[in-house]
Image (tube, rainbow, N blue to C red):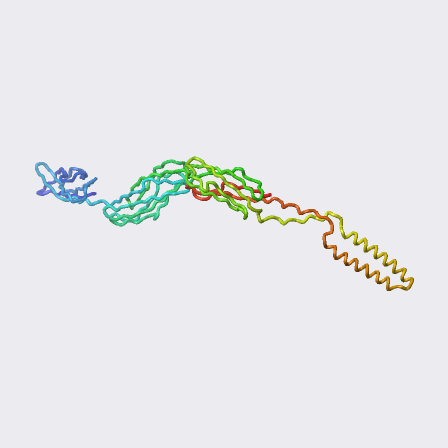
Length: 370
C-alpha cells in the first residue's frame, strides 16, 4: 500500500536527507521512492506485507542529514484477509455408465468472506460430466454452505482413475479442490437356451438347458421366468433362482410340461361324403312309379276310369315326399373325423438380478403339441 511522508527543513536547511524504516514486523517491507530526498519534498513510500498476522504494528521513518537525525512514527494496521476454504467428501467418485456418483462439497467463510460461489469442474475425461446443485451456492459471512456434485460418465469412457479439480470462485478469490473419478465397467450377464424347440404330446415334458455367464463381475441371485405359457402347460426351473458367480457361469434346467391341448385349436372340419348317394334309388323308384301312373292314367282314361289315375298319381307324390324327408339322414358310408392339426406356441424366457439393472431376455422356445 502506498503512503506519503512530508519532509520539511528548518532554520533554512534544504540539503539531502537519508530516510530509513524501523519497527516493521517480519513479513512487512517498506520501500521509498527514492531513498534520498532534498527538502522540502513529499516522500511517497510503500509497505508490502506477506504472511503477517492481523494486528497493529508501530513503525518509524528516520531521516539523517549529517549529524542531524529526526524520526516520525506511525502504525501499520494489518487486517485479516477475506477468504474461504472448500472440501469434498468422499474425495473419490466411483461411477459406471449406468450409475453416477454424488459427492458433497462444503465451503467455509474465512474472515467474513461472503457471496455467491461459482463452481466448475476441470480436467474431467472426455465423456464425463459434472452437475452442481445448486449451481452457485451463497456463502454466508463466517458460516458455511453445502453443495452436491453429481459426476457421471458414458459408456465410451475407459475404465480407470481420473484426477479432476473443482474450481471455486468468490469475487477475486479462487480455490481449487482436488478429487478423483474412478470409472468402472457396468456389471452384466448373458444367457443362452438349448435346444430352442421341442415337439410334445399331451402328458409329455421336455427339458431345456440354460447357461448364464457373468460379464464384468456381475454376481448374485438370478430370477428366471417364462412368458406367454398357454393354459394347460407349465414352465419350471431347477434351481428356481440360480446364483451367478463373479466372472463365472451357472447352468439351470427348464422343464416344459404339456398337461392338456392348448385351447386355441382350429375346429375340426367334417370329412366329405365318399359313399354312394342313398337318395338315388328313391328318385329312380319315384320316376318308375310316375311313369306307371301316367301310363295307367292313359289306359284308364280310355276306359273312362279317371279316378283311378288320380289315385295313382297321389300315391306317387306321397312316396316322393316320404323319400325326400328321409334324405337328411346319412344313409351312405362316411370317413371318420381326421385328427386335429399340431398346435405351435412360443414362450419367452427372461432373467433379472445379479446386480444388473433391468430385465434381460435369454431367448425363446418353440413348442409344438401333436
